[in-house]
Image 1 (cartoon, rainbow, N blue to C red):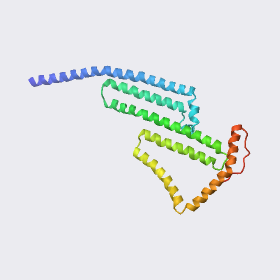
Image 2: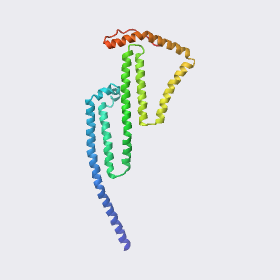
Image 3: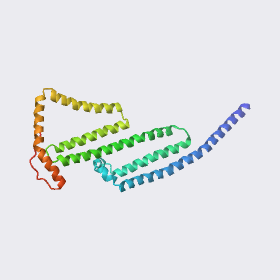
Image 4: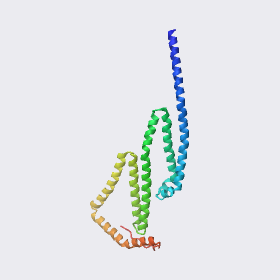
Amino acid sequence: METVQTTTNNLSGGLQNAWATTLAFIPNLIAFLLVLVVGYFVAVALGKVVDKVLQKVGFDKAVERGGIKQALAASGYHPSAILGKIAFYTAFLFVLQLAFGVFGQNPISDLLTRVIAFLPNVFVAIVIVVLSASIAAAVKDVVKGTLGGLSYGAMLANVAGGAIVLVGAFAALNQLAIAPEIVNGLFYAILAIVVGVSVVAIGGAGIVPMRARWEAALGAIEREAPKAIEHVQSRASGVPVTPSAKTTVL
C-alpha cells in the first residue's frame, strides 16, 4: 500500500512539474514569436530603405562603372538591391539572436553571436572588391585614353586592370580569413612564378634574345612617343586623330 501511495505521489509531482514547466515556457514562446514577427517586418523595411536610398544617390551607376554590372547580369539583381538584401539578412540575424535570447543561454544564440561577430569582415571584403573593381576600371580607362592609339596601349590597360583586381581579390580573401595559409601561399606562388619565368627567360641563355626584344620595344616606344602626345592632346581638345598604322612590339 505504501508503495502504491509513493508511486502515486511521484506521478503527481512529475505531472505538476511538467505543467509548471509548460506554463513557464509559454510566455517565452509568445515573446519569441512576437520578437520574430515584428523583427522580420522591421528587417524587410530596412532592406527596402537601403535599396531606395542607394538608388537615389546613384550607387548603381557608380558601381556599374567599375565592371560589376557584367558580374551581376546573371543574378537579376542590381547592386543596390543586393546591398538591400544584405541589410535585411543582417538585421534579421540580430532579430534571431534577440528572439532566441528570451530562452536564456542556448547553442543557437551562441552560433548567431559568432556569425554576427564575423559580419564586419564580410562587409570589409565586399568594400575591398567593389573598390578594387572600380579602381581597376578607372585605371584601365585612363591607360586606354592615354595610350589607346598605340600598339601596346590596350595590353597595358588590361594588365593594369587585371593586376588591381587580382590584388583586391587576394585582399578580400585574406580579410575573410578563408584558408589563409592557402591564400597567402597561392599569392606568393604567383609572384614566384612571375619572377621565376623572368629569371629563366633572361638568365637561361636568353640574355641576348631579351636584349633584342627590349631594344625593339624601346625603339617602338620612342617612335610612337609623338603619336602618344598627339593622342593625349587630341583627347584634351576633343579633336579626333586620324588613325595611322600601328607599330607592333616584338
